[in-house]
Length: 156
Image (cartoon, rainbow, N blue to C red; front, side, top):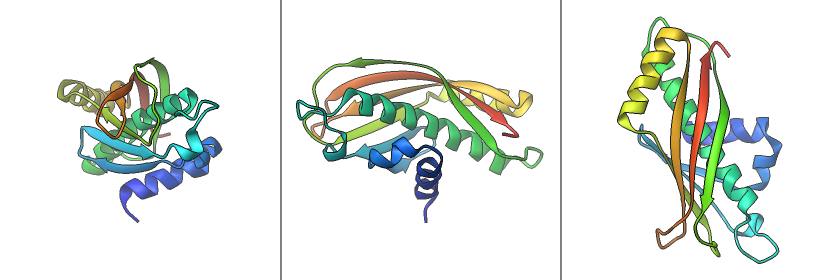
């Protein structure tokens, strides 16, 4: 099982709602997490992707990105131990287009934000991180934009 598959299982075990979203984490390059989800279990009464599912998936992608960055710091640093606890502090989204197909989410952290997050987390044992995410249709058009603030704490 890959690190992303293991993280998805942790999420599904801890948050029952996520079992119904049928999401997959499909990539993480240290700055951007990619998540996909099908339309079928996430549609609304109009046959388009339900806005509630979109915001749940965007929030989840930001949480996962923050978690992976914090866990990487723990794994790389000899004098930092223990579990990482991440919570969403705030989030805002803007819906741009209806989505009649499957969804891809790209959750991204800037280099400066990532550096500052790692420094503060290592020094203070807690830090906030701003994650920007876009939900895309298969043509690559942005259907929803999201910005979330997450708090990570070491020692869970």
